Image 1 (tube, rainbow, N blue to C red):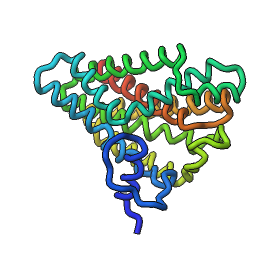
Image 2 (image 1 turned 180 degrees about the vertical axis):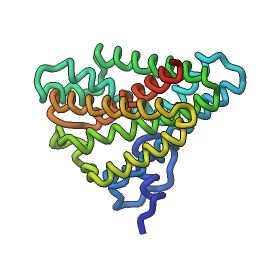
Image 3 (image 1 turned 60 degrees about the horizontal axis):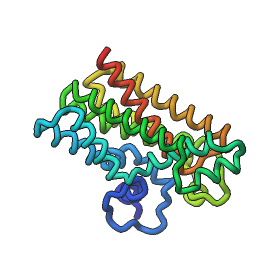
Image 4 (image 1 turned 30 degrees about the vertical axis):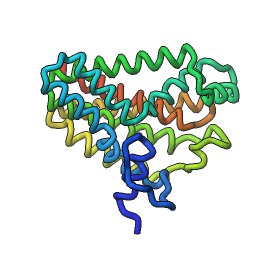
Length: 255
């Protein structure tokens, strides 16, 4: 019988490079994504632990933030950042839907993608460094909450848009049902609340709203540029949603 552990294994195995037990056949990723918020905690744990260890050893805040972001990138293999860069290359490197999709599938990065990737990583390092001003424990919670929020809101393009390609991996996996998305959304709210509401109630609310708006904006842009979603679009929404969440809650805490 399928259990929540099976779904967790499937989601962690797909979203990261972390070692997981053998995945049982017959479990569809699209039906397992209700557990994305919990899987995001597992995936972001190396980043939070890296931050905590570096800070406890007395490392400077900037170096500590770099360690945390690097640990997160190692855990995911840069999966979401790759999609973020590919979207920038495709969306602004081509003039038609087919050409944009062709560029996004190319493994080589162009100027748009390289610059977008650099800015995204630099922004995340800066935000994690700023979070350390609230204390190591608070910063670890913020990093975890950002990871949960980013991956949860990024389910929206997957659920709300048609497939942009006839032969893409997104079409092979399928599309989550609305009930699966709603369960993930409620779980995401509960998890991020547990991590941040003790720091700022209003910041928790505003950060969640801003992150969701950014994911919706990414979906609308993808619909206009390529007519739907791809795996790259979902990855880009993860990065954008996470950065939006981190920026909003950190600005709120510093206000």
